[in-house]
Image 1 (cartoon, rainbow, N blue to C red):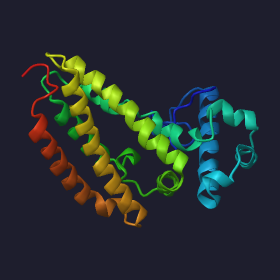
Image 2: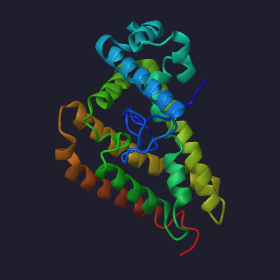
Image 3: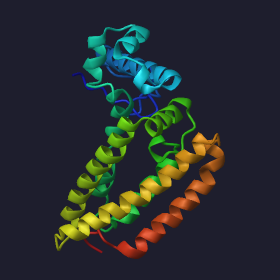
Image 4: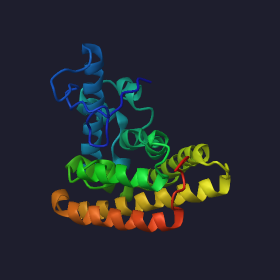
Length: 239
C-alpha cells in the first residue's frame, strides 16, 4: 500500500497544499506530487459521497469511479474503507507523545501539551475540533453517525495515543513509575479530548471557528490549569 500523508483537512501533513506544492511554490518531485494529488482526490471524493449518502451506502467501487481511478488504486492508498475516513486522523496518534518527547527537559508534560494545543487552536487545526471547513465537519458527523467508525475512533485511536504518551512519560520519569505514567497520560489526553469535543460540537452547530476561538482559548487555559493542579511538574526531567 502506498502511504501518502494527508491532513484531516485534506491537505498534506507536511504543510503542502491540495495540489502537493508548498506555500512558496516549491513542492515535491513530480511523482510524489502526483501521488499526493491522487490521495487527496480519493479522500475528498469519498468524504463527499459518504456525507451525501451515508458510510454504509457507498462502495469502494463507487468511490473509485467518482475519483476516476481503479478500485485497486483506492486500496493502494487506503487499506480499508474505514481508512478513507479515519486514516488521516490516525496519522496523528503519536502527536501528544511527540510533543512531550520534543519538549525541553525542564518543561512539564502538561505545559508542553498546553502550549501545543493553544498554538493548534490559533491555527484552526482540525485536530483541535476548531475547524469549520465543510470536509472536516463532514468527517466528524460521519464518525458520530457510524458505529464502526465511532468504535475505531474512540477505542483504537485513544488506546494508541494513550500507549504512546505513556511510553514517553515513562522515559521522562526518574522513578519510572508505570501507574503514574498511565494516569498522567489518561488525564492529559482526557483534557485534550474534552476540549476538542466541545469545539466539534460548536462547529456542527454551525458556529464559525473564528468566532469561537476566544472561548476555545480560554477553555484550554482553564482545562490545562486544572490538569496542572494534579500533575504539577510531572514529566520535567530537570528543574
